[in-house]
Each structure stands twice: as C-alpha cells, then as structure tokens.
Image 1: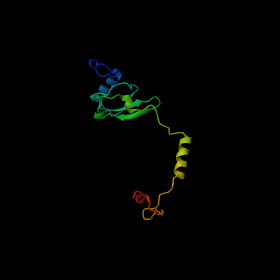
Image 2: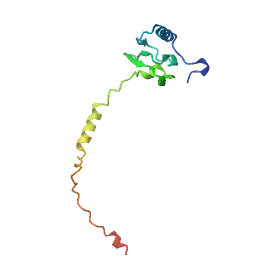
Image 3: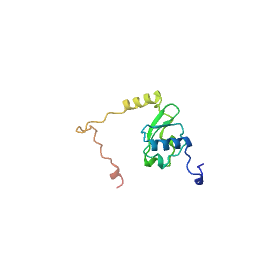
Image 4: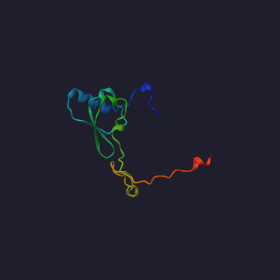
Length: 123
C-alpha cells in the first residue's frame, strides 16, 4: 500500500539535515546513509549519496529522473552469482552437438529432391 498523498513523501529527518548542511557548506563529499526507504526529493538533485545495501555502501549521484523513487531502488541488495554448474555444462554440450554452419562462400552439398508423382495421380 502506498503512502497517503496528504502526508507527502517520507524523507528521514537526519538525511534532510545532512543535505541542508551540505548545501550551505558546499562540501562535495558524499552523504553516507542507511535510510533506503527515504524518497528522493528535488532538493537531492546533484548530490552524491553512499547508500548501504546491507554489506557495503553503493555510490549514487542523484539526477532529475530519480526524483520520486526510493534511495534503496538504486542500491541492489542481491547479487546474481550465475547459474549452477550443471546448467553451464548442459549449455556447453548443446553447443558441441550442434552442427557447424558452412562458410558463406561454400555451397552446402544437399542431394536434389526427385519430382513427386502426385500431380499426375489426379488425372
């Protein structure tokens, strides 16, 4: 369920304080945050954040297209490790069994099909 419109977007109050301090100070250092549930507001555009994904901090620079989204959307918590070795082995054997295609200039030697006698049978 989404948040009520009359409440406005949720932004962690400590995060707002850090952004205000950064704007007055002008320090280009990224803001480190654990608040993945905070919504990106227009005041965040152009600011760099380090968003925690549960293991490490992911560096993100906020652009105009990100406004309205949550900070957590841009730092994935899961990393795809690849398919199991059995799937990789099956793919390799399928490639090996597939016949090789002939070169572009070479003609494939296919026997000519004999004419069928189906047309004369109707008469």
